Length: 188
Image (tube, rainbow, N blue to C red; front, side, top):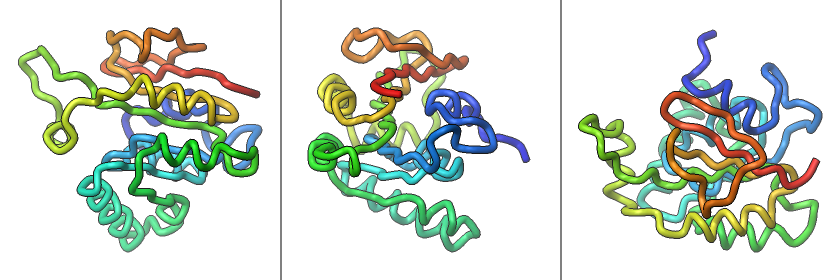
């Protein structure tokens, strides 16, 4: 099978092994900024259980529709690993981070990329999200809550040449041509 673009980088950023979930069976991943569900579905396809948080009611409805279509279209096992929460991830993380039993192993944060200054526009789906959601002004606060909640790591998607969120240096980065994953290791 041909791997979707970026899957290998996401596998490394999540600390998984290709073809399996690594030393931690079925990690619990919280996608704090699910959007239309790209990283959500990739993580679920890799065997993770995923809590997908989307605070925009409109985008959450679009994601719910996509999950329903995926389930009806032969991806029922993958879609079943996703629990959609139409809420602000900061509230969800604060609520579930009370005990180790409910804390996510990994938190994914994919803040809205800043508008591009290049002549080429972002993909159509990204343009739609930018119009619906506007600028992402609270990525710093979300990163802080995620770092407190994640048992193993926080993975932040950034444009390749953008500074890290909050200016905080990651433990390591998984580089790509257009984007990278900054990884903050919080535990084992």
